Length: 147
Image (cartoon, rainbow, N blue to C red):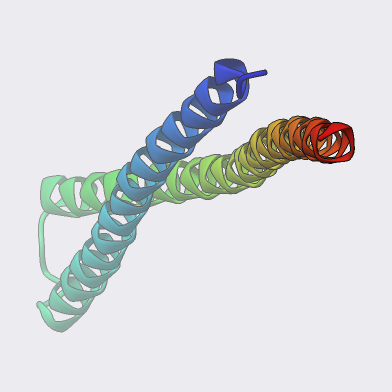
């Protein structure tokens, strides 16, 4: 009786899945961090521009005021988009964490099955060896009595 290769192959496949999920998680975390940095830069840019326009004199022309409002509106729209993207990124990270837990459980299951198969083969081998030793002992005993 041999150890079955299927359980160790399935365990290897589960480990590959975990490695892939870890790489995806690292990539998703980098994206989230990039989005958070972008959000912070947008906030800073918005505040700087608002402070700059508040400090400037109010005798600007109508086109300057319209341009300012349009630019600030674009910054707010961009900030909302980044906020949405951050939320999507967080959700993706949660999904990856859930999938990682499932993959770890699967890997542990395959590892347990591999170990159980190995122990069953070892038990079978020990039993056969014991049976052979018992037969040899009986044969020697019978030969000793016959002599």
